[in-house]
Image 1 (spheres, one colour):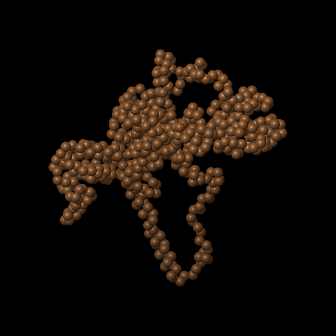
Image 2: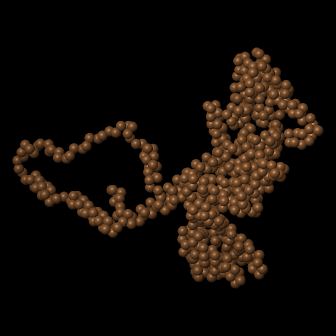
Length: 623
């Protein structure tokens, strides 16, 4: 009996079996000109199955023989001696016809993860790991796809290594994209708020001097305002005096006219050219071509002036926040939180921060279960949350806001559901007072839940048609009264009486009975197109609307976190809730892949990752 590599007893001679599996085609540590040993790879296995071949790389490696330096090396059926496959790529062993030396030629691009240590990694394998994170969703699905395409399958251990290698790069790409989106969103939102402030101030100003482009500020002192208007009136009088001709000019003109009409002898001076008493024009100064400012330079100058005049009413940007758990309920072991831009920044809604929380670590759990009492081996532990799953949302929110503040991007408004735990935690832990915008969809959804709960009560007759109609009325009221608290309260108070035929509180803007008082009115969305009659139902509905009417001031500035819901949906497509991904960093890669996809689009894999790998390879060559 002998132990295998996992420490279990086995009947197989593990040492001899391991030696058979060793493939030593040549020595990577010591340079040798001897012919490599290819007994382990020679054969006709290269004729079976399909390969992903990059012809440019293969022909570049066969440009000359590594022994005799003659070339190119002929590639034919008779010169191929074997193949060493490495995932989806590998090495082809081709014999030189001049010196019979067997050359190993890689038929795929390679890169290194460290500085000239170990064998290089094939780029196609790293991209396969990226595809497993972004699209395929696990080693088994990857091998099922490869088997369908008649490509060589890859062991799950190697696939996890490819996933980790690609996941580290993907996290960096996602972080850089989120930072750029946060900077852009903060700048655009502050410019938008400053522009609105300028328009409001301009509308409130009076006495604008268009020639000078100046006017007194609205909060100026009365003495300054009177002095300014007096000077303006005096300037207008002076202008009128200068433009009116003088009496002497009139007399001279009259005398000249009279003298011309009388027949008098003309003197010689009458035929002289009149002298020009006007002042000479200044000589134009030609500016050199280098000193002339182009439109682009003027635009840059304006951009430089913007930070000098920031907005006065706002100090931070608005972000939408939402947390999702990877298991239904509050006993989940993993959660993720998205911070996304809102419609206030005048740009597509993008991810500015992602936070993933783990309550457990798979490696630590294995050591506690299998090796109790022993010290856990050093590893990258993913556990970063100690507490209940319910507290994950507030903890992740505080962590995200803190990181944004450290990056120089303050946050002033949070848009999300009605949970105010995050607001209180921010004030307690960071000393920051945040403002909350309720999500319109969450408010309507909670109201609809209350209606269905009321429907299930005994003795209450409430159909789905009435529920959908009340939900529609509430949405209309929220949409049409943004920024108008009085109008919001009046319309909310009129919703319930309107359904029962009482139009005393209705507004003609929403009620057809008020618009056409003389005609018969029918409820098009209620059952039988008539008013409701149940007094008990009216009392119950009024009790349901009273809290909404009381908090009408909170609903005049509603936000939306539907972009976060969309991001959560994208995560579930990559990490279904029926599977557990929270024991390792796999879920981190999946969340960052979702963020990169939302910010950069589907082509982020081919563009961003390719640039990053190229940059890494260049650094390795230079160092």
